[in-house]
Length: 268
Image (cartoon, rainbow, N blue to C red):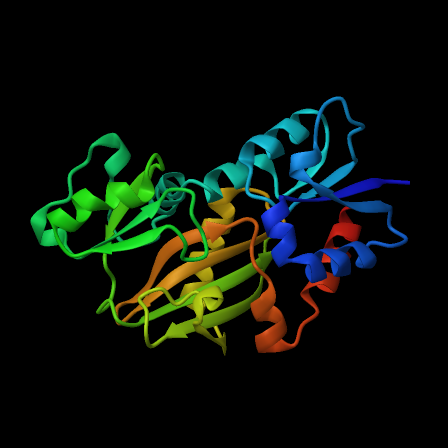
């Protein structure tokens, strides 16, 4: 019988216990599934056949993959998704538009005409680790907030008081569902920060953008491709490999854990 690990870190697990249990229950009969905390992984340990990594740790994914474990998502995907600089370079190579960024870690200066800018960590997701800077003075103080994190800056899209973005769920390399997120009180429209989620339909040219990203990323299992929604069209923003599923429940009434479990079973 196949051994399946569903790997969380403790904080992520505390916020997602229900989903973790549903996912484990959905794998009953397909293999010996268990939820494992990353913090408890101390060598030597018996490796699983499949590891569903629900913690952001590209190094862990690479370690497991190098030892023959089928990792969901593959290590290469995790590495690109969790470094915004690599994600934007991917978008550039695919010809997908995105807001120009300044790599502050590499010493790239932000020109005065670029302000206001959004400063963010290269590995952050969910609207966390984000600061809006209106001028060079604000930018100089942003380092106090980020401490030793690697950060980039991007020109603000919109008025800074509201936000719109779109998440496209991709399962097994195919577009599954799209959700529009809207906030009237914050430039960050993330659902976890109070943004309103609505069903969305992609135009053919928008689907083509998503598939260019998917093809450039390489084989992947479950990802969320996020775009900023502007008057000029979609701008690529980021890719999440440990993608949140709450919007699939709230917007479409989909049992996302069951859908994901069925996909994992198909790999076996």
